[in-house]
Amino acid sequence: EVDEHTFAPRLNENTRRLCEMMAEEGVRGGPGSFLERQAEHANKSRKEKEEARTQYDDDCTFHPDTGNAEAILKKSTSKYMVRSGETPAELIARLAFLDSQQKQSKRHLAEETYYAQFTHRPAVSK
Image (cartoon, rainbow, N blue to C red; front, top):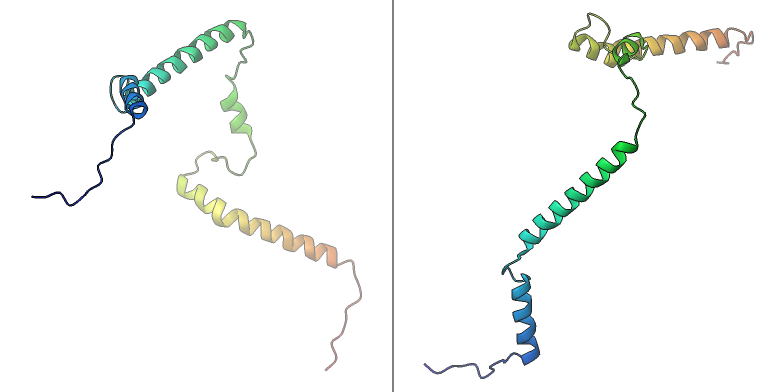
């Protein structure tokens, strides 16, 4: 069978040398492949973080007491807090419907109170 292609590329000697160097350094998956370099970098980064943490942990002397957080949250008036004895379904109903209805009724009462001070009632002509 006769080769139909007449073009026969040849690598430059510098290109061949670069390819060999890259293969040795792991660029093309040889020893020291990408995954190995990534694992090495992750280990190095983790060690540096641990060293920094231990260095700064010794410097930190303030440790606040957050032991009363539960008591403070129970006294909270936030509408998103679960009230005592309230089931998740009741919480959802309250937040979705009841609080909205209360807000609308308060707004309606405020409107009525505000507009009650005005005595002029315009008449619509027919």
